[in-house]
Length: 334
Image (cartoon, one colour):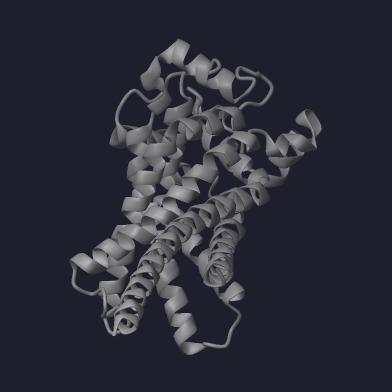
């Protein structure tokens, strides 16, 4: 009898320990999942930006060409001409000018962006009561969730890493006149010349552009990928992510490029001898650009932007999905 009671106590104790161990394992898996999302997002963003850095710099240089008091002084946009000028005057490495700060910005930005997107998406599905009905939910409902989650994620990530984005823009926009010599020098100079708030110059315009841009990007990507996989389930996930990411990049860039152009010019006006041209808000700046450069001025630099986002966004989504699956596979073996 005593033996049976002892065995029963041991059995209960053993079961309790197993349950505790199971709960601990679940907690660990949750932490691993979060770390995997952050790491996969950061690597994906940094890798894609490095691959497309030359086109990113060309885009910025085209966008700020309009920052002249005399519109007649504007050069006719030519990707080959500008690329040749950079190569001849600054050398091959100049195509990656500011890429270190780009990576320093993109690692945390993409980490926060993808991580918060996954969590905002879960939260929205839970709030709307579609948590267990994702597959059966209407297309419009899913698009709404992806759009809102993407917009919130973009705003969160952009707000958290904006000073580095400002530094990246100013370093990349330098040509012959070198005003900033590095990340820390740029940060110190901005604080000295413009105050702490200078680190957030153009933030409002940025959020107005980034929110819709990331919202369109994520919702288009998720919708295209879902449609593709339902019609061609045996296609390579890598190819699907690359293609759908590229198409979503085109959609988001086309819709929000004028806002991005205004953001760049707001970040750079009055810097390094540039004139302070845009003294009004967003609408006033847009009107001035249309008046001095025409409607086409709102899309100055859109061609290199397309060249950049087609591979860039595709590579980013492809890398993120691949790494996420890889990390999930690793965690399942632990």
